[in-house]
Image (cartoon, rainbow, N blue to C red; front, side, top):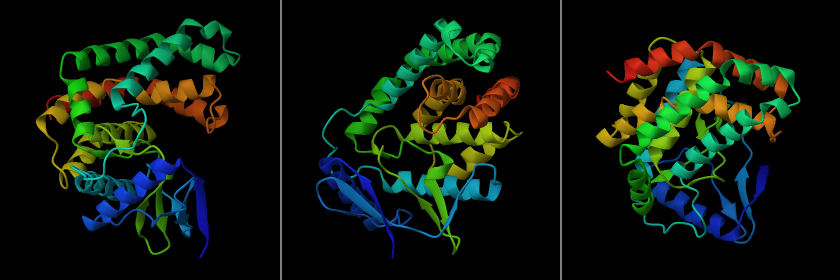
Length: 282
């Protein structure tokens, strides 16, 4: 058997091994087995299979169900939180809004004309969408909810890109790459993944309802989580994330793939707004 080795802070590695053990005891088996040297590495077995994608509807439903089972098993865990700063969901969201604003105010310095033109065309509208979402979040106990989720040891993955889902040759689904996992608001996972699914499929009719119904068939959302989602869905996370990644030349962001995706999001802004309006009455 081949193994994949990833560098890890020793304390975080020990924490993740304990969390993994708890999840398995509670019946969640969709994480690859992990071993650690206790210092700086975590090893997981290499699996023959394929990376999932968010354009495949049947795969999406299975992924959403698995996420819900992961969240259900990862509530009120006994393992103490990892040491160090948590960088919770509220902080990450605010930081992304701030970064996009900084890009918007210096877009004349961006080398790629396509990005400058897209920001000129749609950047301000998306930024105002983000401001509106943030202002709505400030009117509800969002910060308190996130802090409560951490204190109660609610586990979140926090990086639900499609490449962090694998399907082996037997058709078994695996959730992988837990470097960013921590105790945090689980609703942030659902929101992040839902927005990526909708954007990848150009905001199809009933897309939002399909995802949320699949999730709630396993783990019903609490009233406050629905209220938070109603605000979060107004936040143009995918546009911000991709634009920031390209402008700051982050690893994994390439203009050839990301620019058409950004353009598609901008073109579908009205469809996104329509979906969110329907959710408010869902």
